[in-house]
Image (cartoon, rainbow, N blue to C red; front, side, top):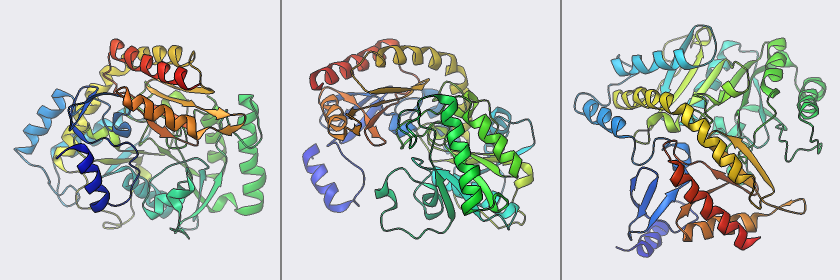
Length: 422
């Protein structure tokens, strides 16, 4: 069956989703993907951050998965104990920021990791029933996490009213913010003043707020990088009122920014961290919620799942962490290459760090969605895979194993496409 027929039948039998390009994947090798017709593509998407170690995964991760599969796979991680689950939990506790006792809850996806985080801080103090989240954020699509998500209206369309009391405030987006502020310090002050002087004065008493949920770098919102001091200042506000900080690292965690955790770039220590995507090494779905030990569920059975903490996923996650840790210096070096190249292209904004970059297109002051989409389409025709983000941005997130030669090839294609359109 050729790709055209597969696309036609998929539209007939599969639910409406976000598919845009007529790409029918067949196999992957490192940073390259091949479609069912034999065409070859350089991947600048990493499976939306899942395949940080390339396709189908790193050889060492595959070997670990094969070995564990032959011993024990499912393991009922919330009913019995297994060694891979313990080993991964210990590594996450040791690697994550924060010099205080921590525990880990395992699940199967990012949205589940966020749901667990919400439950943890909610039950810690029953009188605190509100959450603060940010405009432009994406935290998942189950109803609890969707209550936080505010990236695109289509993601929330027809699903409200939502079960959680969430108040959204502006994210300190240097390129596009309600105050049109360009100075980083002034922007940070504007956001925090809005929170304290308006939200905490007119909408909700801070003593009723359980947590502030954020992405260190907004993903679906457009790969938005806030000013360096934002989270340290936000932490001061949270500590002042006894509010927990929930750091969503589902897309930016596990080495993507040149640090194991993206929040490490911002000199701040959250109380809860959520992970998924890249933790599974591209092979196995896994979610993880790392939290202050004092936040643990008050009674057995308050929260659980069937597949979380399964032995294969945890063995894969443990090996993934080992490999990514060794790659971090290289990720930062490659980040310099991407910054230098992207900064000289005909785009309207460039932001990012490590191997997480966003480029944005505007016409006048309005988002130029047409040009953004055309760049993605033309790049696809030339063998480069890209994904959209935000209003009119493109996310550039190649696997962390990409070579300098492969990076330069992809950036050259991107430059040629943009030059042909602008």
